[in-house]
View 1 (tube, rainbow over the protein chains, first blue to last red):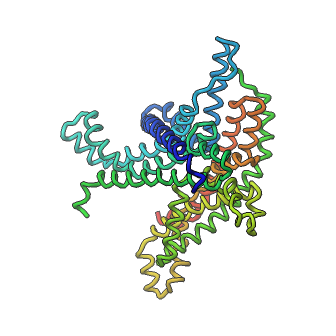
View 2 (tube, chains in turn green, brown; view 1 turned 180 degrees about the vertical axis):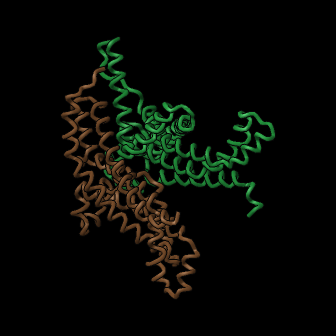
View 3 (cartoon, chains in turn brown, blue; view 1 turned 60 degrees about the vertical axis):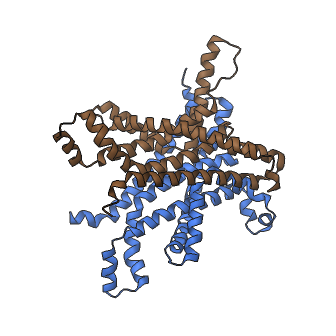
Length: 231
Length: 231
């Protein structure tokens, strides 16, 4: 354990970066998931095709491939654009933080699309009819009836999406984001103790996964509190 | 921006040279992972705490940490330990291919074991009761009643996991292996044309994913044929 002394603060800041990427990517995931689900449920055939294409492509290709495509693809495009203004520019890129968060959100968002769509359709039609019969407008039905019933259904799979998201943040180290895996590589360069360092990274991620699992458990209990009495 | 079509035509055969390695990784770690999963499952449902508890810890650790970190621990980390270098496993763990197989097997084993457990738990109790009323022993009940039904129940989730495993094999490119992803990364590093190369590779992976889904779909259809006959 002695070798880790002196690296604690680096690993701490690496963990902070993990949390930051996670939060940013989580917001984007929810956004992509909602847009995707809305498109799949819409009447427009074009929107349906686009959304189906999105889920098929991003669920069927390796995460690392999407990440590298987003990062290097955007870098090539940006470099080309900036060279038209200033031929001196050699390389411009989107920071790995944003490229990485965007890429993993695109991937997990494709899974979230299916989750949200399933949850939307999973709400008991009787409840929707009851809301109509009570004279609620369609917006009121959505806000007061559909969404409260929906998030309860979406929560367990969405917990798994959050776990995928936190684990995918490790991949962003490949394009140079200074999160824990990247810190570990630097630490190995000076200490020559790869096993110790990578195990530490594993422990940090296990901690994050545990926090997410526990949070989802608490939220599920809250979401299902109206079923307590029936039990 | 112009799409470099000759480059695409040139790079697809090059990437397909890594197809064999990708399939080897998928097949070997898939089979070994399934064996591991079955062992873990039997330990988990044995009803003996000293067998079930270690499996639960194992599954928790391997599902809670990123696969990339697991690959790095096996490939970069284990050689730090003296007893690993002196063990009989060293010839396997010395090679990146062996490390990739070990890491992917350990990872997929944890996931698949949970999927199989879901299948076993999903078997209708009435069937088991009927079997025991017919005088089948516990062992016979497990082999002739629980197993066939559990396999059918677990199959859809299992096919998803095979696809995740395919996606994880692309991470072998991070430990110097030249699978399709590794070759693609080399081509991009040399030509700096991420769109052409990576998008072509995405198409190759999508075809593979589709083939896996299709084959599992056929197996599922065959295993569920009695359900259709009833309807």
